[in-house]
Length: 239
Image 1 (cartoon, rainbow, N blue to C red):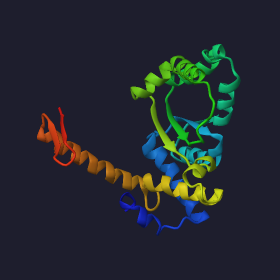
Image 2 (image 1 turned 180 degrees about the vertical axis):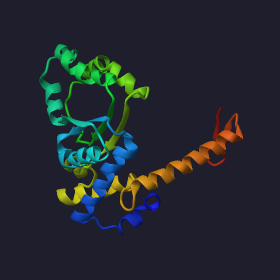
Image 3 (image 1 turned 135 degrees about the vertical axis):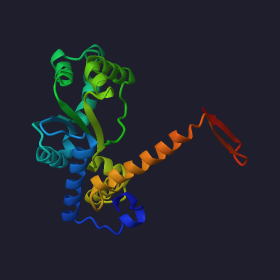
């Protein structure tokens, strides 16, 4: 089953261009069905890096196929964001335009689901940490209603990894860019149980197993767990 695939087994699932496309479609469908649990007639907001435009299109297709009322994509570009942090004044970074904050906070008044697609880039060098902190704090304050709606479950949300050449080059520096990208996609698909089979079925089985363990532990009514190890000197009590 997809939920039982090991790294060794993954090597037996060759990712040809055609196979990769099929598995990426399965991943996109999983994010809609189990990631944000999109309901028919609901609007999906996708936050995506420009590097992931091809996969983002698969997500949009999957959302409409699942009955989405509408899908809106908010594109982001990390290098542009870093350039802003380098050149904008500190006082500028401490403020967030009302229209930008409203574009997030309005989601709390609408029936939407939120999906953030994330990739990685080489760590920036030479950024002013005060500017970085100021911009982050300003953004969190300005969009607090939206953040609160996500944390409380009013807005269903999920964050999902997408492979990109910059990230793949960090993970597989000895491979050519296209080979590194395929290798990283294999890792993402393996971890998300999307390398073969039906990932929705695989996740449902995985969740059922976890729920069974949870119920067993709850039924035992433990008041404390005590971990000890003579070889390491561990003596840990978790109440």
